[in-house]
Image (cartoon, rainbow, N blue to C red):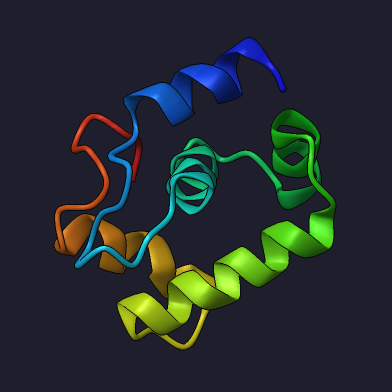
Length: 87
């Protein structure tokens, strides 16, 4: 796992949003907010790209949104993502 990925996991809440979002999912949200594509996220987190896709599906269910496009907006609106991340 990359240093950047380790830092993200270390700074993530263990579980957030009603104890539903897991640390790796939080890392995926943050990396996605930075504009990193799923293949690169998978490489950084040392998981398969299908794992990233599955985690994003679970995040969409948790945040009650239909698309990946709405995922970051919902995460920001609900206070899950820090304001300093690019919109």
